[in-house]
Image (cartoon, rainbow, N blue to C red; front, side, top):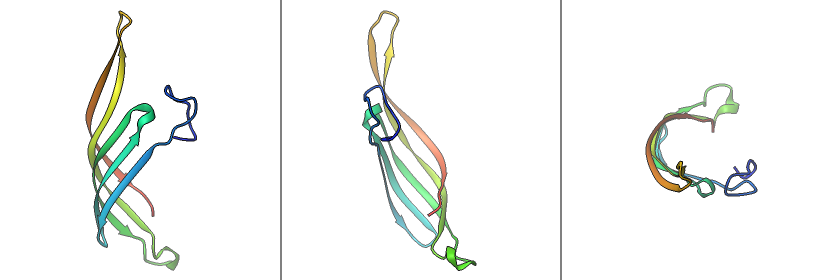
Length: 106
């Protein structure tokens, strides 16, 4: 998000931050995540669980590669500004539940 942009609150792109902390075993991991993007008043937090597929069969060049596949659930918090017909703005703090399926290659 630093490269893209601009946003309403910034003439340039802004830095967003994603943090994922996990406890893991050979074939699974569980953890917590948060995403912070104050430039657009976006915040999310939750938990995740992944099953790790180890790609350590032949050829040997994949001996340390992992394919985690799993689910995550949490909440997204946003502050939205609603414009009314009479010209006044009202900020609304919205908290919504989220559920997702994820996969990555490491």
